[in-house]
Image (cartoon, rainbow, N blue to C red):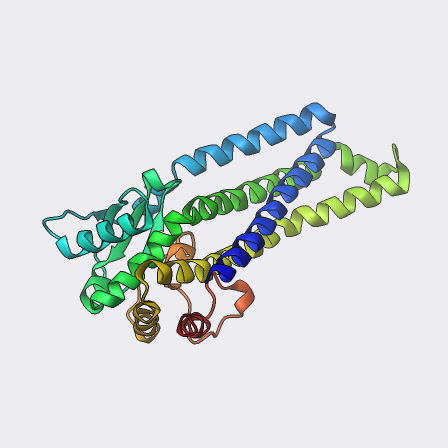
Length: 299
């Protein structure tokens, strides 16, 4: 388990570094096309940072609103609170706020930008269909997302995907509106053929960046799910509980009505995709459930 955790952390760090490099390159290209030089690069980077900050600090409220989640009270859901409080104590983190989604499909997710502001949200279907060991396994998985700062990492990657898409759009619009780079390609001035090639390569990168950014986000999401499974098993000291819960989640065919593409990567299992693996792994937010169960059974 410790080896898997260390490996996933290293790989996730590399992927996030790739995101940051992509944002810097796009900002530099935007500055070049707009003819603003280094001051333009600084302005573009500041704008990207400001957009990231706003999205980061409002992420949990936005996610809960999109999911139509409501606060769970101790009086209504004492069983859930008992499990969450016990596992928070075991994990050594503040007790997250509890929310529920009124939906018969079993699922759960964690959100928030740090452990002090974390939220664990479950569906009423999960509470109805899981036994005690299985519920503990699911909540331990989500608690691990909080403890390992996955909620921060995933929030940042979602925001960075948005920033990359926005920068790419600005670049393409600047070029279409007759930016400095377009004049170079057409007139062959400044750096001549080399400059034209550089601009063309940059525009191709700008066009492909949103797709590349999405693939990076999906790869990070898959790595963090394996990590949360391993960390959750460490919290409960009972990997079989989470493995059994994953089997039930895989077998359940009830659609989650409140799920959407913006929040699908947060859930313990993807609420949008066929659990049988009909969609290519490259575009999945989660690793195959069979692989996750097999990893838990080896612990």
